[in-house]
Image 1 (spheres, rainbow, N blue to C red):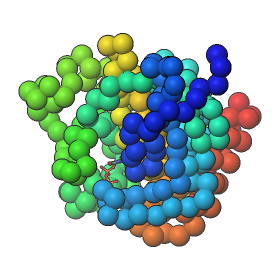
Image 2 (cartoon, rainbow, N blue to C red):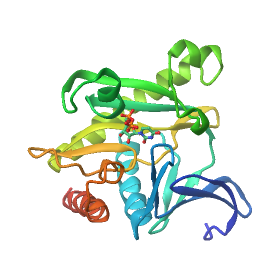
Image 3 (tube, rainbow, N blue to C red):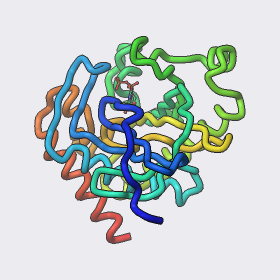
Length: 243
Ligand code: UDP
């Protein structure tokens, strides 16, 4: 296949841009920016190579989950921060998986972060910046047609597989996968993972010290943000090179 020629931008999000490809309606180019936002874009930042690090980590982890049987939109890397992906219809339901108490769960229930859950939780949130991504009940998703029961079942199964595969991988690096968020899309009528798997959308804590290796460094002004993202990429690449 000839190298794709970038067309117009059809979507620009907080950390990524999606471009059409000339003469190729089935695929898109996903470009990872150096921008970071938190608290629904109330806090903004940017650092050099952030997009490169996220693109590389996401491509590596997405490839791992693809091998474990989760269909994804990822086709291949085009450059150090651009990926060829399938064009999908995004399901407006964000899927959060939690293994430990942290973030909004800790905040809402007035709990300390770090308690282990007896089993992973799968939670649904409405993908809406203007509403601040409110939590959804399954009945609401079905009632308002955001997804069907079959789609929710597939999303739950895939999310738990991602949790197992990515969690086991990070365990081998001495890192605990605390929680993460993923989004899915519809491709030819079936559900596929259509999102990044990066430290922007996950909580990753170093075992033993609980040092945070994720976007909480930016959200909470913990310092060494760029350095920590680079360190995570190096650890991911080293582990894959040895596998
Ligand atoms: N998350 C995300 N995008 C969102 C909301 C959450 O990527 O819009 C990720 C977040 O990084 C964390 C997990 O989902 O890894 C659970 O987030 P939580 O509900 O605790 O919300 P937070 O306190 O991070 O806003």
